[in-house]
Image (cartoon, rainbow, N blue to C red; front, side, top):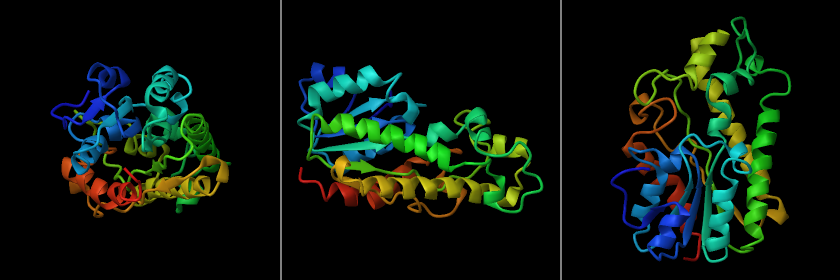
Length: 260
């Protein structure tokens, strides 16, 4: 679990129970909530020092795993605290597309002759992957609504990462490696990932318009960071300063709309 975090951020439901804490903010998701050097959960805890934040999930979690690998953890969190939390914040979809196997399902095996982002996608993509991811969001939010019909659900869509090939402790195969394997022109690579982020945001906004989902707030995280690689620790994760900036510019405005 992340180190040197705020005292009001609890990693896992068992931790909250052991400390006899009553979280008002629940966060379910991937490394953007769990990254060991900095993450949005820590920044939310800093922004809301008088609130207790419960974090569920793990590094590398996929939205598709909310109903499988992490189902018991999520069910337990909802059973214990679903009815009482004031907001639920979700982070998911990034790991469903990043990585050699997942990303190669989205783009053609040979993109060397393509001069546009759209020309790089396989038939029916990225609509198919976005539909799958939104299905995961919808299933989780529907489950949450069985416990809590009024608490807003906050969604974010990461930010425009740079396909640099840089990982946590060396090279990574998240973005640049699959693009390189497929022969995506270097001038298209950043735009290709940007298009996925934009489509994720559009899908989230569409989901928020569904009355059955209850109140959904879509944080405008995409574009929070300046368009430079210096604010990114690697291909998928911002620096501590980057996470702080996203929390302040995108997450905090939505939290201010939540009656806590």
